[in-house]
Image (cartoon, rainbow, N blue to C red; front, side):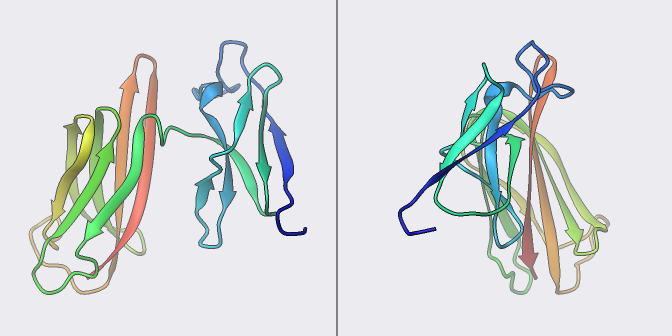
Length: 177
């Protein structure tokens, strides 16, 4: 494809006749097109649009790749930016985990080894709408022992519940100690 050229991609879906994707609790108006990037992460295609009359999600694109339709709550309900610092962690420093919410949500933070073993559950807490909410990890496991140096995965779950539907965003990020 020549530089500057675009093409339109469209994917259809089935609805339940009540405003949701068939067999799910995902509202049709929350569908977006996502592109699989070179890091293996799905990134929202901001230009994607939903035609709920014809049950189609479409977008004008300027590059080929792997695309999928998914429910998306990022910009309206959650600002999915999460920061962990300092990273890498030196010595006995604690890690500050900072995130933003566009609506109140129950947030839980868990730390895992790279093979998926739970190291520490920092618990769940309700946070209001706003910026720069913080949780902290002291570099210790669930019984208070300092963990060895290595790579750990931080998993953050943000749940915003409205009557009959639970919306959830799960983010993972590596912490190097």
